[in-house]
Image (cartoon, rainbow, N blue to C red; front, side, top):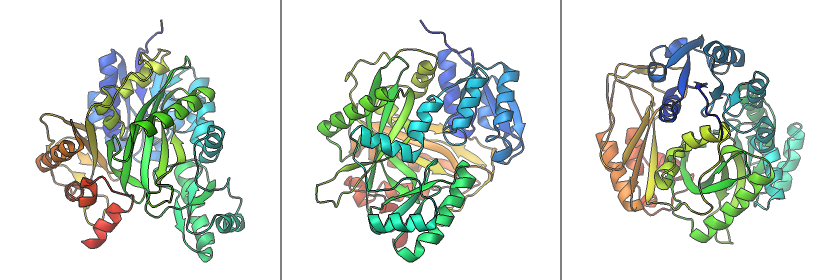
Amino acid sequence: MFKMFKKVLIANRGEIAVRIIRACRELGVRTVAVHSEADTQALHVRLADEAVCIGPSAPQKSYLHIPAIIAAAEIAGADAIHPGYGFLSENVEFAEVCRRCNIVFIGPTPEAMKQWGDKVSGRANAVRFGLPLLPGSGVLRDPAHAREEAMRIGFPVILKASGGGGGRGMRIVRAEKDVQSAFQAATSEAASGFNNPDVYVERFVERPRHIEFQVLVDKHGTARSLGERECSLQRRHQKIIEEAPSPWMTPERRAEMGARIEKAMIATGYDGVGTLEFLLDPDASDGGQLYFMEMNTRLQVEHPVTEMVTGLDLVAEQILVAAGGKLALPERAWQFRGHAIECRINAEDPVSFAPWPGVITEYHPPGGNGVRVDGGVYGGWRVPAHYDSLIAKVITHAPTRERALKRMERALDEFIVGGIRTNLPLHKRLVQHEDVRAGKMTTRTIEELVAKK
């Protein structure tokens, strides 16, 4: 038997903090919300059992300030911290500090985070376990080294932050003359965003599909790959719409990749939830090969689509695993049930994509059969300018992909947000796009759609 946590501090904000509070409530675990001065009246603060202010609005002085978060946990008597996604969720130092303070970090061990969370070491693991890779490099020393590696691989290439994700610290380079400026920009952004300036270079695929695999691992040597999500609808490397299963995937491909992933997780001592991300080149002569990009050693924004098609509560499972519980999911016992689609609703101008903070004067989320909304706002709440613009996620589930898309159309038409601008109009266009309807979208689809307007 394992001992469940008594109190969990949530080192995050917005919709993911609300999501974690809900899971904890159902597990009988008390919650502590932390918040900046800008989030005093935030929904997660109002819903948690306790709340602690940890600093000013700037993330570096609040949600990214490790001493303040640890102090809040100790004051509140929390025996575990859930980092959500973003902020400190993949910060090895934070996980190590939690360990030294005898507070459970709800996530993988610092050692596993180093092995998989760092993109360069993650690529080395991929080679070790037979996961195919695009041609790439190790950590780049300087612009000259970057130029040398880019010319070896062949243009176009993409520079990527070794210790980050979410589209930050990335630069596409199409010619030798642009390598130096791209290297400087990527390392600067990586240093400011992840406190790690290391970057590497990889061959750039012009019109790829983005497919990722969800994995769940306990501390007793049991790993379960829970299938894939299609995340090709992106803008500037930021995902906009995700779905499960991928229209490209076959049961045979899913089973083969899942077996490789489970083997890799067990061999490297990983535990908790994680997502392995792959690129697919649909124009390749081999008919489409999945290439490993990176692993995110945390809960993903898009985890609800996997929950909808598997019937699992991934956040609850993540907490149970962190407390020492065993996975009760038999090998190969789960099956995808129907199709799920998620739209990320951001507070931003639908044309320029500029963030649009302000007071939400009216808020009416959609509902009805097969519709789920994970949100972190309410009517009268002021969306602050200091953080990510995501305010809610709309997830629809239906027996078929076609019906899930129609259900999403209906849900988006019902969603009312007053007082600020959102990207709802973009989502409405996307779910009616012929390539999306046909399941033939790529990471360039949104860019091409916007260019036509």
